[in-house]
Amino acid sequence: MHLLKDRGFVHPLSSEITPKATYLNRRTLIQGLAGAAATAASSAWPALAQGGRPGKGAALAANRSEVAGATATDKPTSYADITSYNNYYEFGTDKSDPARTAGTLKPRPWTVVVEGEVKKPGTFDLDALLKLSPLEERLYRLRCVEGWSMVIPWIGYSLAELIKRVEPTGNAKYVQFVSLADKAQMPGLSAPVLEWPYVEGLRMDEAMHPLTLLAFGLYGEVLPNQNGAPVRAVVPWKYGFKSAKSIVKIRFVEKQPKTSWETAIASEYGFYSNVNPKVDHPRWSQATERRIGEDGLFAKKRPTLMFNGYEPQVGQLYAGMDLKKYY
Ligand code: MTE
Image (cartoon, rainbow, N blue to C red; front, side, top):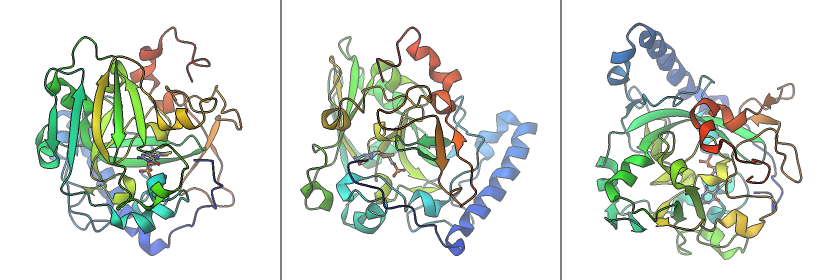
């Protein structure tokens, strides 16, 4: 993330962001309808893919989620920005590297191993995972620890749906995510920037929270490789690095699991990593953020919100905890 200097963001051509206008028109229309018929809205929500898709991925249809907090009110970031400004160190440390180099990732066939403290461990084929629960569209804010943010229309379902199927034992206190680490597919693995495979983790109640998403797509299509195809986690109230990409293993464990960033620099990246404007990173403030797409010469920084704006939904998970200590 900051082991190497970010060389800056290349603004997309206006021709590349046209699909956003299509998307926004549809969203405005649907939001209007939703007010009048809230209960019918989710089934009426058309796949974003209809009427022209933004990228080259296969269409992935989904209804709008009814989980509280699942729809940010801010404007979605353009497809071009979401898919060209990435952190995916297995494909290079520059923001523009993953879009250029992740073509070597093979997202099919794909399996996810679920193991550890569960009564029903197993290996899930991607198609089985896709069918496990109805796919939902969720517009989440993503705040990166580096100080920028985006608003992304993800497609997936609550990770809790999968967790319930595998029946965790009483010893399951944490969940660890393991990303793919294959040198043949991932050129960045030859650089010792992080310990591979990339690992992340959540406390069990965080993993079970309905906002924690197992994502398979964005903007009406399957996930582009650079965004973590074919399946990733999205934890919207935590800094972006908690959201592991291209997951191959989900492990249920009793002790707080290792994470790649904590292993690399424990004094800077803690296990919790909740978005918190009041707790600075040792090397910079976390009080404000730059919204990707609004980074013109006169664009104002936005104030960062407690728990990235999801405090009403997740604040109680941390009641009584010293968030300076558990950063
Ligand atoms: N997952 C893996 N396996 N490797 C990574 O380097 N980067 C993280 C996270 N997940 C990363 C990862 C960081 S720092 C961020 S901000 C988000 O992915 C970025 O997700 P996006 O590129 O889809 O916006």
